[in-house]
Image (cartoon, rainbow, N blue to C red):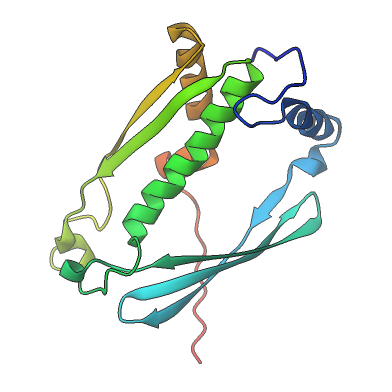
Length: 187
């Protein structure tokens, strides 16, 4: 990856601070460990609220406070009070990749004028509703299109695009199976 030579922020990213984080992680891999956790509670009908209280970074707890609401559209028996889980999944994918595009452009000294990621996928409700065991409850394909503009060349943007696909956690998570362990607590 090409490095920016001065310390002026690019695309709102403090490249000097980013460089400090990179150097700290290189020097001590234990500083690379970041753990995220959330708690989701049912709010009635098809609604839920997810509480974000913080995350762990390099063995330290960082306190935060955010609420993420979810609901289904009226046509899927919800109250349409928030984005549904599928829209939130796509939003999380896009948001994660956005960080990658912006940071990679900043490290290369490329000022962005526009960045838009449009993502779509199609589900078959027969799988979700348990009507046909041969129909998956999830996506076969998720497609996304990135529109990016700025003072970089086509080759610069292609290199950034490849870097994002290689390093984005949510791109990886959507594209690869993740071992998930479930525990049921009744009560």
